[in-house]
Image 1 (tube, helix red, strand yellow):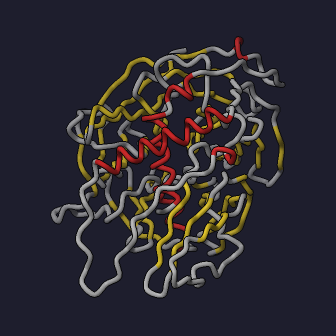
Image 2 (cartoon, rainbow, N blue to C red):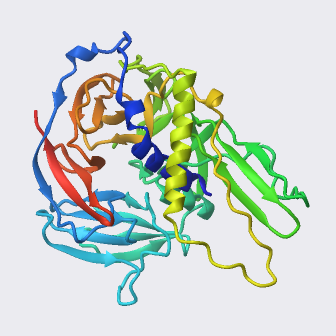
Image 3 (cartoon, one colour):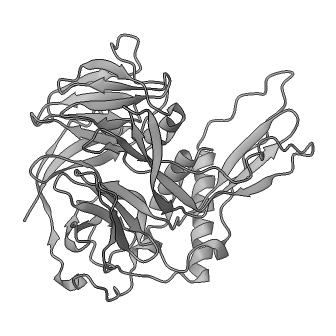
Length: 426
């Protein structure tokens, strides 16, 4: 089980089983930011939607200067170009044999990246390359990455949105390997599982295509992560221990190249300017909610129950190949309740984005002011929450357009989704 798949699985399990646990919030603490009661809450208006028969999901979008948008549908493995009305569309890459451009064999959640001017990059993981797309949807050339092994982190979508700074260098996050680098070579004939704890920090890297270099520009605190390895002489099986409440830092890059690191421990932002200057802004108000041991145990139990229900709906595995070792069933393991944090994390994992105006949109894990849908904190460059934006029920934020418009995913049902564009009503 890869880290990216583990993150996706946790999101599905929590969204279906733990809504009641996450729904109640406590009072917000005082901080150097504006009082929570003084922060205006904005609604969305002028919603325009695509047809529900085109998309199965919306992983990311790329707004175009003519008002159109490229949608990355990682579920159906296709790139779709919509016009400004979202009514006319054209598939520019998919998995069919008649397509002039191949999407690839794996869904690329974070594989659509804004590039220089109005062009875009798409990550081709099969060929370990970037495909350059012009504003009309044409694939015009191929670019080689400086470090091909990092494309997994760029394309997975679980490590924040990669982007390019004003000098054309790509900023992205990866994951450090365990200090015990030989754990894959350690084999036990009995097949006894070994638990390996992963590093508690993760680097934000800068890839320079001209100099062909990669350097570290920031470090994030990574959530508690463990990996279980079963290695005998004939086979090896690895999977990640599920952490249903990951407590770590999140990041985003502003249009001017500034890196914003949202610290999950106390809900403040550390800033790294393009010239390397570091600064910090005050703590922001957040509806802190304590997580007693009884709720920790209930949360773990609900995640296990949801996974059991999910697995019960899966088709049976194929019969083993004659002469080949029988692979053991992957056990589903979670952290122990005592390993979970004592408070709900301030930020939901992977839910920090920067808009075109240089604001940071953060989705807190709890919010007493939220209605039926998600409520985002919008933070300016000074680290102050200037407003909150209420999304309609069933929507998730997937990107931004011009003139402070937002793009949303609306899942209509199994295998049916739409992309929506809306204005923030001020």
